Image (tube, one colour):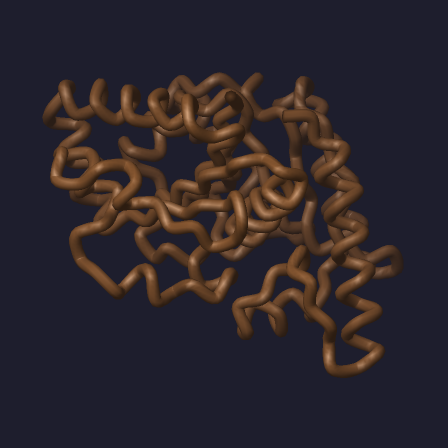
Length: 261
């Protein structure tokens, strides 16, 4: 089954939100989905209102599975029906071990491969920083969704990502889709950034499909502060925010339908 990553060498562009809601979308379609947080902030737990799972115990992280202290079922958390999350503790230390001990890399690859026997999809959420763990998980990924903010810093994030792939010998052809985020039809900055992104993508990642740009909606931040997903059966308190929720849910659904995994 597909192993899919969201990535960008720029923080705050919406990688975690995008892949979290993508996982929830597939779970609502009856698929069984695992999201591995390769970011030891484990922010994806918070956006689903499950941050208590991160701090409840100190021995149920991915690292505990890797060294044989825990079984797979002891380090996955069901946060929505059919949707499971896995947390990491210290990715810097894990990356050092992966660099110094080649056997650890084999174990990591074998573990991820084993999970494909139990889940329809495995999604991997990354921080903007890079490490040996990042390189291995990107190499394992069958598809990479490159999330790009539609502003000058976001465009720099795209450029830095491409350079990182080249430097680390990661196949650029694995970037199956580019996800532009923060679009506004009448604002100059996101429109210019989108034009620049299309030109860059044509030159440096020609195999990637540029998805329909996702509008910037404040309602997402309001929902995340309450641990609510746009795909939860939730009613907002006022008509204005309910209208925005319906729009972003519809927009994301159309984007997710267009992404063939």
